[in-house]
Length: 368
Image 1 (cartoon, one colour):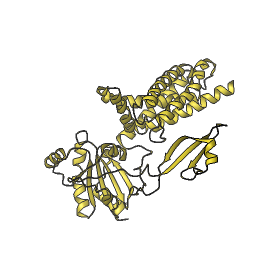
Image 2: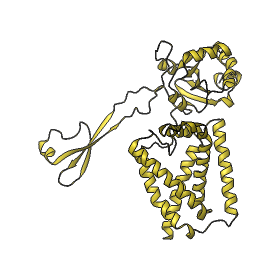
Image 3: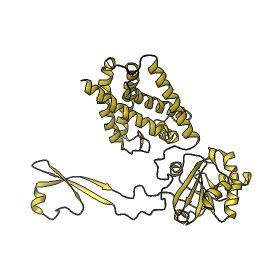
Image 4: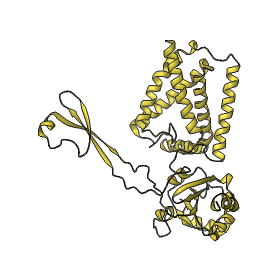
């Protein structure tokens, strides 16, 4: 039983560390998903609590993982472990059956899972967490008190600092499609594949075929097999969905994404919620880039009349185009944020706290 206890402790610990880490280094992404839950439950009044609650939960999850993996303070942390797992197992049960949100984000953007897969994952984890809770007094701590508490406290402080750094700058690891180095001007030209599964009437055996490569015209075979299920594989599911619409509703996305030289996107998913002083600081940058012959445009989901009023007030001269706010949020975790592209590839991204000057860009990229 000692081997089983150790195995359960290590597996759950690793899962909690990974889950807490990938969400904790992208706190804004986790905030967006939490706000989806608030919307689903009609508690949007709690949106302002999403950020502190996100950081608290991610730090707690990561710290519980450390506690389990290194056998620190388990007798006490097991109570928090069973409470957290019970809550999220119940929540993902409702997700799986009622589809409250499209993506719970249990592993952030690192691993995508359906609501059903997430619930089943939690059921498996509960199968290990419950024994860990029942065996909590059998675990012998690696450190004696108060050493274990000091180590866990230090871990919580350090991980909180890491989450805040990623919030005030950008995630240290980017799992999204617009990460640095990604080619974002790909076209969706790959064929969608359809798979069908047939079940043997006599044996219950199942066989999967790529359509139309199955014996649909074999009457003898069809007499013993019945259709069971179908699934689709779309190799274009991660294709770029960015739309860049002008005032006439024309989609100019490919025009901008296929520019062969350096060009800049200023992403402002919401002008009202943006850091406007940081946006105004880009005025001399945008003028210098335009004078040097480089494209420099803004992307926003804010209404055109509100953008026009802001431009008139601030004196910003570069053009803004309309885009979907969900896509803009996925492009960069900053409002506003700056993206540099070349030949359809993301070269660099900057949080508004780290906006560079034109001379810095020219020396680092253009003159090299």
